[in-house]
Length: 409
Image (cartoon, rainbow, N blue to C red; front, top):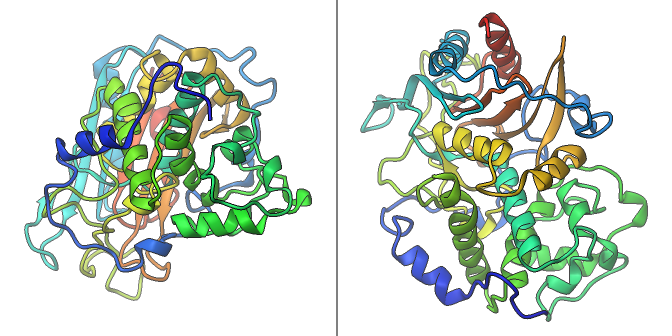
């Protein structure tokens, strides 16, 4: 592996950063399934049209992002319009809207913790952190692209050279590139996401005929190992790779965007919870079961697991899409053109955008609640971060777009 050219991350740096932060301070329930944890289907949101995975025709050519939406009053009006459409459709929800210049609107409703059945009840807010599920992939994608640039490694380089030296590689695994991980065309199918499962996945290999689009959590879980290896970290343990990855993301992606230190687990003794109905109707929230705390996803972080708020999500996406705080805009254009960590969506009548959703469904084995999350940047200049801590009575993306259209921008 080449010596560090710009930035070098060591395991001691990771340990120092984590020990000095709030990451390790608060007690929480550790999920017994964490070492095999995939908390939902390999799909980033419910009611997902297959068109979400299409590339934008022409890439970013002729794309116009409007800068006319710069008023904080308009941002708040949009946030309130979304809240009005969300009302009564979930246990709790939080919405943050940002304009191109960073003006912000916030709205929330329902509960972060509902009492009863849980203790320490409180209302939902846009600062409540909770697991963001697959929206973690957009953060991991930005982190990978930044580390590739730091080491002058091509997107089309083979990944195997940057995996642990004691791993073995089955048929055709050595053909997988960083770009193919990012756009889910690696050929990886149905691998687990913890360290041992990823090692087994590499040894099993792939079929070349499978190198077509197939959304797979393992693609992004591998980045939890690849990023530290590229940056010079040498560790024999799953814990070492995870801590190095988390330190890098905090230092080089989240903190430059203005987001306080984050973790892949709850850092509060009474964190926000996710819920499911206790009635026979899954969208009747008059009575709910005890909430899901999600637990510690440190060892499976990357494809999922980051704990962030609606404000954090909008702040990250705005910094990525409209500034150079995380990546140069030329690199972001490549993300947009190639669906690298985000997906283009045409909403019709001239409205389009890039998004990534997150979803752990309530009816997935082992889950005791549901989480829905979203980052979305539209070509009218709005960036939106959403957290919903239960299943949703309807299609929340349709409600967001209807709310945006209802506001005279």
